[in-house]
Length: 68
Image 1 (cartoon, rainbow, N blue to C red):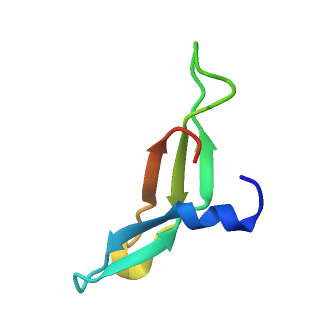
Image 2 (cartoon, rainbow, N blue to C red):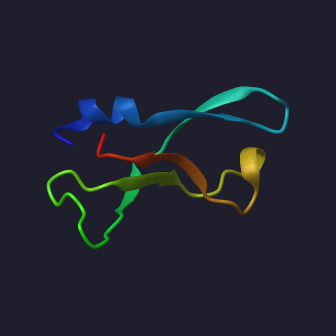
């Protein structure tokens, strides 16, 4: 991702304990590696550490797929 402007596309909506939608920045990511993968466009999992009022003790997964 080139520059901080690109992280805007890494905001994903989650519903909190009150039923309100919240946008969370899932900037952290890991690359999925497997035999025969497209090395140039590796698939990734974008995530955020647990957020108390959304899913206590659970990692929030914002997106699984091609590099954003």
